[in-house]
Image 1 (cartoon, rainbow, N blue to C red):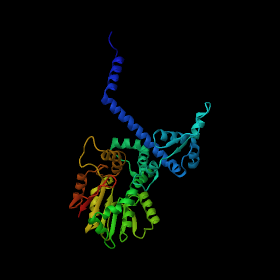
Image 2 (image 1 turned 90 degrees about the horizontal axis):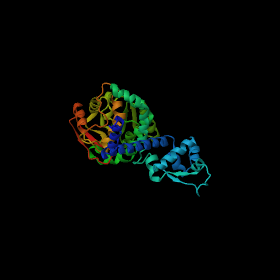
Image 3 (image 1 turned 120 degrees about the vertical axis):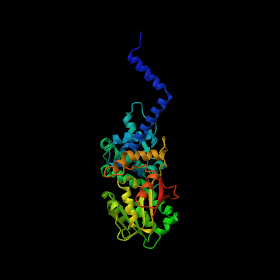
Image 4 (image 1 turned 180 degrees about the horizontal axis):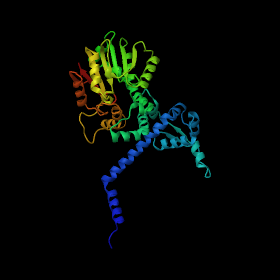
Length: 384
């Protein structure tokens, strides 16, 4: 008696599941699904203020958390249980064990949850170099845009930062802010060829693609004799930067401009120019770099800070390249292609690509500065 097609298919499936390579890859995808769920849950806790409430008040029940944040108790309870199940929170069961006839929901509502101090730093401390909640905010911003991203992938169109919205803008600014505020000044001070220019009396500095202005303000604080101009094409980011400068009391020396850096024109030449983590986003990077070169005096300095990806493509790649390809797929490349003409660089801008852009923009050369401890970024100096 022969085997049926169904039996053959079932046997093939069983053989595949018994294959250790197949099994390992299936386990990898399952682990990735768990990680994606954790990140989306972090986004929920971050946006609803649940983590911050736990930091401020200590162990809380689901009822207390909901009351403190103006949210629904049943959803708060499910989130608390998920976070404890994933090891993000510590669950503290109430007193003695529940009576046999106790309502499980009542028992669950009495359970208290605490956020460990180390986890709180990563999830809520915006001034810590370990602050990582913005990574979840990026994923939250991407989700609503997936239909538009799929259409862009089909047609070659784009999805701009403006479409991604405030969650994406704030995530980008917040993840970089502690590095700029704590590490940029000492890093620049260790680079004599940069520090000496910035220390000139009345030095004029331009920060292109400045975003929320945290790099611009950090330079101004570190070099009190300098006047610093920030330039960005995104109006909401410029508005946020101006508000931050006013709060910092630096509006006398820091000016933010809503403009395309490719149209940069200086009535008086700049001593120094910076581009922090933005050249790979630019539709016209060569035009921007050319405008920067023309705006900086011959004895000045131009520094580009971008992703510290590997020099060449490799598969499989290291974690830095993997995370940058993620940013590129869902944020940077779609944004770069949302304007035309576009170089379509993407986040994974390798040194050879930037070297070519610099050469086409008229720079004499490009070198890597000795900075290896600044987030996942690499510092380049473009020779005038």
